[in-house]
Length: 102
Image (cartoon, rainbow, N blue to C red; front, side, top):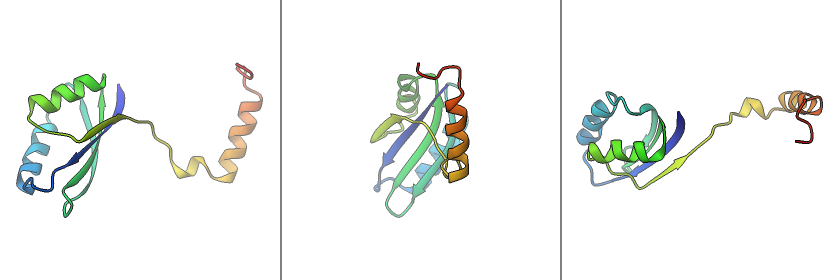
């Protein structure tokens, strides 16, 4: 499964409808809703999904009458991977890797 970020910007949409859609989307079997970051006041939601591909996720939203402003395949990193000690470990491991120079 690939990871996607769907951006929904609908300030005119009532919050009750957003919550109703969330109840429906939590039951979807063709993709997996991971989490949502939102600003209720601005009517903006950033939803993380796992799906086989972007077309399947778009079809899921379309079938459920959920609109989106944009959608991206995404990857993830975390701050603890970029601390000085972790970076040194990464460089040491990379220097001795079997794939060096590939």
